[in-house]
Image 1 (tube, rainbow, N blue to C red):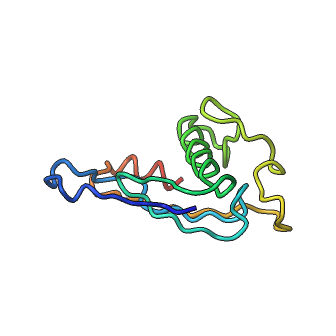
Image 2: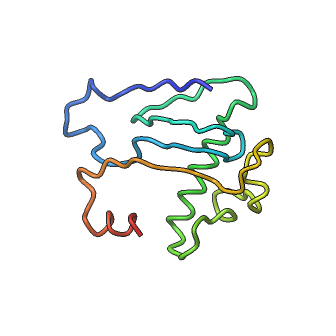
Image 3: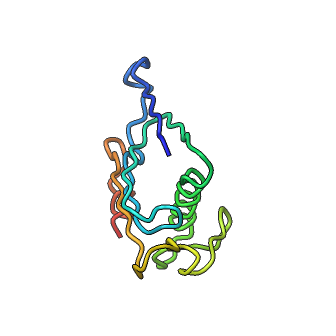
Amino acid sequence: MKIKNFTYSFLPPKFRPRYGLKKIKISNFRAFSKSVDIRIRPITVLIGPNSSGKSTLIKFLLMLQQTLETGEDAFLVTEGRHVSLGRFEDLKNRSSDAQHLEFEMELETEALPQNRIDEIKK
């Protein structure tokens, strides 16, 4: 999968996004058997052949969104309004023997209110 990133450098600073997801690192999640670092920009285009991970990345982001929206203490909400991914066995990469999922996120929090930052850290 190739990721093409475009920035809003042509926009005046007051119109550029000041917070949001900047980077994701995913390992052992569906199509990603090896660790994959993905940088996210205001405009990100996913390009690649079938089964290269484009849909996996989108489903991962939807899973994170529904996890944050529920407000529950669950680690990951895999069944919800945005996406239904099933059980752990359905989430992990089938060719991997690892019994865990790994992911990291880097957030830009320049303009994010402190109470929202505290919620995300939980």
